[in-house]
Image 1 (cartoon, one colour):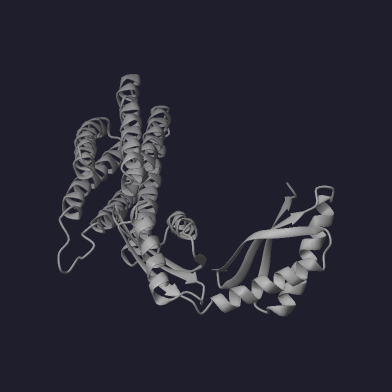
Image 2: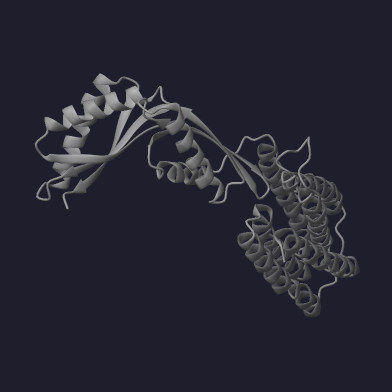
Length: 366
């Protein structure tokens, strides 16, 4: 079964289970006059709507690419997150308004151990549903499914709070039930804003996975002829990931060789999980890299404790230019002495290259 079909099946399971829980909790909540349980039932209803929006979003996401959506419709998965967010905020606000009224007009809760047991039965149901969607999300790389695991487990915390409130209300503390209902409403609003922020960032391209950026960097540096990596941009369209990457090649290469290396990088990226790779070649930084490399060699030659270095990489991080490398020391040197030498090397490097910092890793000679 392909990814789309598996995720559709998962969304139907989420929808069906939560509709059943909504009806079940609502009937009990209305009968025993528990506003908190009624609130919890609507929490289950929002979960059912999540399942419905998952199904619709997955169906749309797997439509083939067209002229207006050249990378497909995968970002419909993030629209699913946005629908979830809006539903949670609206539901929480509606419940919160009702809680204010109910705290002023306290209802008498019909307490019974049987009702507590009937409510507690829903906890293992939600737990195993969460485990199911989490496993599905990890196996199929569907972040919205994996995130739903914590949503399902947080629902169990809510249900647990409802049970505590019911028990306390049965002891005469009637204000506890609507107060817990209000807390549930605030929790739903918090979840809504959290999901909303994430979905908007994804839809607007504001979030880029560090893991995917690091993966693209390592794959590209593994190609012979690639001296360094410049800018990397990663764009996610559901399961399709598009990468734009700038590779730094030697300025001595002819156009044909540079073109061949860029194609090798492109092929390696698309063969390792990236849907599409756009590779840009930059030879202008080569002179700088060679100058930095020569300067580091000259500086190291002045330090008799340093045997050599390897793994030089020039990169940008949070607006700072960094030269990163591994320093190899004699085995009998103390760690404190090695750090002192590395610190002195960094200071001298910064004097020669203002705006750069030297990030060193200390290794003993093999």
